Image (cartoon, rainbow, N blue to C red; front, side):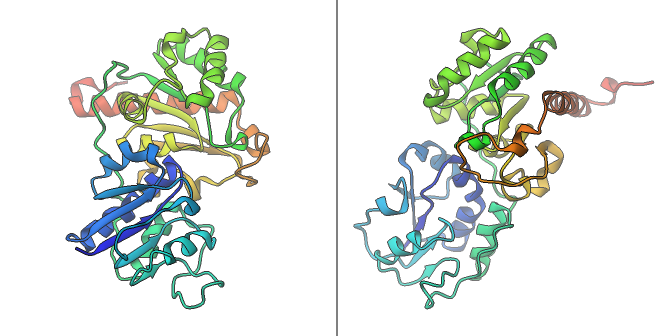
Length: 326
């Protein structure tokens, strides 16, 4: 059986933007053994994609260890740098599909276009090799929740870098508004963000019982996000997770434009991405100036809009007797 080895040794959001590409590979090569090299902690989400036969742990390209047969096809979904190409070349693939890199003139791949949306980028890479890809095929069937937070608002306070982390006191102000409106609020984050999440909850007057940050695995987090009426978060993997399970979002962008890493265009009606129009260092050590231009009233207005849209969407499903008149 031929092996297809795909390198995507990055975070949760990066994996989710690659889902249409992974599914395109599955459709194009239904009898091949598709192996994904990605961080081991993402395996629960990889299982939900249902297009990968095997996963090998790789926190970054250099940590890839391949002792299987030489792949018939190696696919570099890592980025524009040489690291991914170097590591995949060591597996001695029959063919290597990657964006062009001047250090490897023998590879005939498309040029890297930094302004492309991440989903579009990987689909275009496959299409350059004659593999058709559906950019809309990114949904996940959410796991069953073990706790009941149906119709809550998830406020995810963390991000992969300080540059993308909206100030805690602002998140607290938004939570206070939601509580006054009678909404259940759940504050999420990873294990390194639990203290931050608890501090924000305390400022907002929210019980610690409503702060599962740092105490949920990826399956539990996915179920909570899927049950929610709305997710409010920064430019982080949870925004992509909400998109994948069909939950509305209000996402806050700073260093990176949402056209590159935000909600995909065909789902723009279900998501509001706030952005001041400035770009900067996505991995900076301090909050991005553009992100800081997003105000509490702007986030509250967007959240109220999304919750209102959801109520009327539900009314439409129930029938015209539930419509507001006058």
